[in-house]
Amino acid sequence: MASDALEALPKVASSHDDLTDEQMEELLAQATSRLKEKEEGKMFESEAPQQFTFPKMDAGNLEKPYATTKGHITQADKSRLIDDKARQSEGLIRKVEDPVTAKKIAAEKKKATAGTQWYNLPRTDLTPELKRDLQLLKMRNVLDPHRHYKKEGGKMQAPEYSQVGTIIEGPTEYLSGRIENKNRKRTLVEEVLAGEQQNGRFKKKYGEAQEKKGSGKKAFYKALKEKRKGGVKKGSG
Image 1 (spheres, one colour):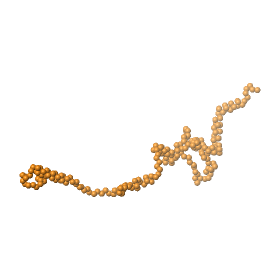
Image 2 (tube, helix red, strand yellow; image 1 turned 30 degrees about the vertical axis):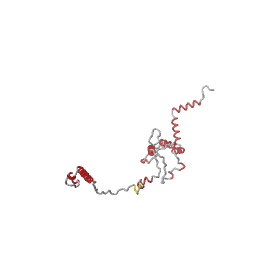
Image 3 (cartoon, helix red, strand yellow; image 1 turned 90 degrees about the horizontal axis):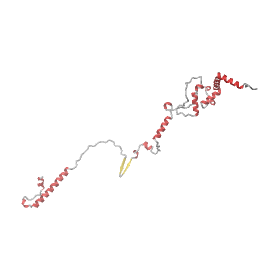
Image 4 (cartoon, helix red, strand yellow; image 1 turned 180 degrees about the horizontal axis):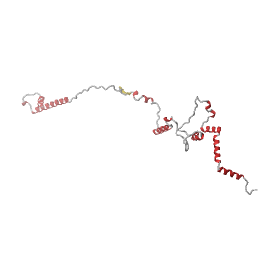
């Protein structure tokens, strides 16, 4: 510091007697200002920013940006905003449904059939005709007494899922084994009534049942009572 201050002093005469006190103070002030400027210059040089270099890195193939800028205008690539499926359904009408209602409808559709394992049998539509046919099937042991059927007690209960079909004769069957169209009936009840007109089996069975009920003591007493009604009253004449 002292050496720097001495170097900053201007070259003057070697004799100190020629300088006054004011001149000495002025020279010292000039030397101090020059020294201060020199120190500030060194400080600025030491604070100069250092430059660092980084190695180049390969980022690979980057995805093409969605927006491009030309001048002061930035445009988006419309073909990349939405996919093809969404673009196709853009102009279609979308139906918004209540999730509770949609779930209820789906459950009803599921219950409408017995499922794929049961050939999707539909739910039974119990019409009066079908109800009578099911009642006849329950009494099939009466219709055909020569064949044994499993006894079923209680009232007739329609199945939850059922379907009525039509038996079609095969081409190998004889014509004599087929039923003519005029003799075919629409329901089982009509077929039973038509068969009754031909053989009269039910009428015969009804007569036998009535005859069995009319035999015995009850029938004898009833006949005796009828004779008394038709006889002559006492004291007449």
